[in-house]
Image (cartoon, rainbow, N blue to C red; front, side, top):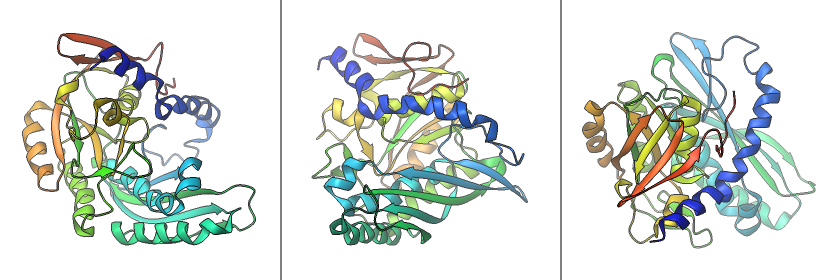
Length: 324
C-alpha cells in the first residue's frame, strides 16, 4: 500500500473538503444560536440540544441530500434521508421521534421513487415522517429532512467531551456491501431485519445513559478519519490512530474504506476501563468496535501504519472545520 497516497486521498476527499464552508456559516449565525438561553451544547455537533425541563433535552438535526444521489437514484436518496437523520440522533445517545421534509421537484419522473424511499426508510427505522413542505414546480430536485429526538440532559453524547488519554473507538457494522451505484456508501441496513437496525440505535442510547462513552459522532460523509477529526476539533484535541486497528471489511481497499459512509458506524472516546465492555456489548448488535488510538493534546491527527506516521489533519493548517 502507498501510505503517502492514502493520506493524500483522505485529505483531498470531497467529503472532507466540502465541510470547509461550515466555518463561515457558524461565524455568521453564532450570535443567534442561543438567543433563548435553552441550548445546552455549543454549535458544531450532530444535533442541537434544547433544555425542555425534567432533565430532558429535545435533539434537533437536519440533513440535505447530495444532488448527485438525487439525480442518479432518487429512491436511495429518499431512504438515506431517513438513515442519516436517525444516525445523527443516535450519535447523541438519543431516541429519534419524528421527521419533516422539504422537497423541491423539477423532474416529475423522480417524485414517486423519492417518496417510496422515504417511506421504506421510515418503516425500516421505525421513525415517522410527519409533515413538511413541497415545491412541486422547483427549478432543481432537492430534498432536506429535519428530525427531532429526545435524551436525558446529563447523558447526551457530544463532540466536545474528548479528554487527553481517552481511548478512541471505531465501531462499524461490517456486515454490509457497497451500494451498486455508490461505491462509497457501505450499506448495512437495507437488507437487514428492521428490529436489528433499530436495536443498533438503542444500543448507542444504552451506552450514553450508562456513561460508557465520553464523546462521539456518527461516521458521515468525511469518512472515518474525517469524522474523527471533526470530533477532535470541537474538543480542541488531537489523536494518534493505528490504521490496521480500524475495523474493516476486507473486501474493500483501505482508501475506499476510510472514505466510506457506513449505514451504521460511529467514533467514540472512552476511558480504558470501559473499552472491553463497549466492544462486547456492540458485538451483540452486529457492530464491531475496536480501540484504534488515543486522544492527545497536539491538535493534530496522526495516522500510523507499520513503521510510518503521517500528519493527516492539523487544526492550524488543514482542519475539516474549525471555529473559534
